[in-house]
Image 1 (cartoon, one colour):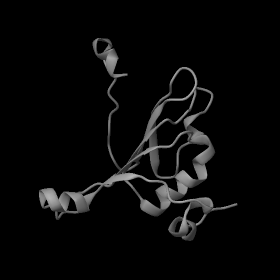
Image 2 (cartoon, rainbow, N blue to C red):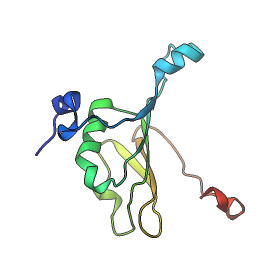
Image 3 (cartoon, rainbow, N blue to C red):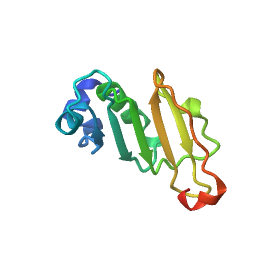
Length: 127
């Protein structure tokens, strides 16, 4: 079944919309008096397996158009290439867990320049 933007308004795939925490321009307007178009829209979600929610996730990106999405509990592994995850207009940065469950990913709009930073070994407790 193909999901549409109308599905997003009434609930994804017959379910409630996922609860996503967003930080975008409206919050900044209250706190920082941000009136420019430079404000960014962020989302964070614990997806508990990205593979079986790819259609809903792609629909979320299409409907909400966030600049950056941080995803926890991706449950991805090395056998799943980025090409299967990347949604049109986004780059993906991921860190899979060795073993069952876990893993994190960030989806960043193609027009945003970024550089991933490797965590030095002396800060391994941050992994």
